[in-house]
Amino acid sequence: MPTIRQMEYWLAAVEEGSFGRAARRMHVSQPSLSQQVKVLEAQLGGELCERLPEGVRLTPAGREFLPHARDVIDASRRAVRAARAALEGNGGGLEIATVRSIAAGILPDLVHTWRQRFPAAPVRLHEFTHRRLAEDSVGDGGADLGIGPPPPGWRGPVHRLGWEELVVILSPDDAEASGAAIRLDALRERDWVMFDPENGMSDLIAGACLTARDPFTPRPAVYTSQVETATRLAAAGVGPTLVPANVVPADLRGRMLPCLPAVGRELAVYGRGKLSPPATAFLELMSEVSWPQPPTDAVVID
Image (cartoon, rainbow, N blue to C red; front, side, top):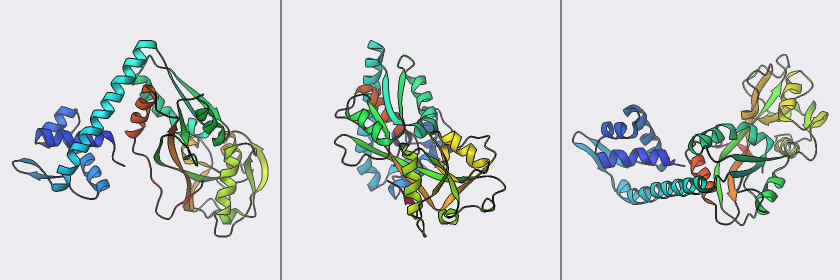
């Protein structure tokens, strides 16, 4: 999905009639701006403008895209202005409901950027062990936004982001640890590091193992409620586990292997009714991120 920033770069090139002048206007290097425009065009499936010696000329697709791109950029700027006005007026904050693994793996950079833009607006994270609890929090008005898998049958705005890949953690001397990737059914006879049944990661692991070529139900070696604990237990050789790739500690002395085929879950941000100005501003911030998308043969767990 094209980002607001990509549209802004392209619009600057069109309005300035030059990629060089557009880069100076946007305070980036010309190669960086050109690359982002190429990514935008690749995502849309064709060229939006021609690079000519005398300047930049819109293609037919670019002429159709132009007014809509301007509308999107104008709307995003209005959302930011509205949020800033609300936040500066009363010092209000933003409440986000999610599961613990997403709070640790995805939100730190987003919250950091939010704090740079809105230093007067604190963020409160409601971290739950299961996605259904996060969904209930948003539905009951306890949080402005929820972040997690798209809620089934949700009656409010849902904006799909991308996906979160799951990886297997093994000890470095494990017999299965030497490959570049691993099939889950290669671990069917092993005892696993599992999560407490009330933790959503338990359902995720069970669902992933049932999608293997030779489906199975993992046998538990130990139960935990914390993702980092699970990764360290697996790295110590207690048994394999499956966790989001973005929460694996950088200092983990274990092997992190992608699944074959890739396994993960879809991510979305969702709200209840009309979004508040702070929630709209946070949604705009999230739209600026280039979210990973699943490979064509990936297994997406609900």
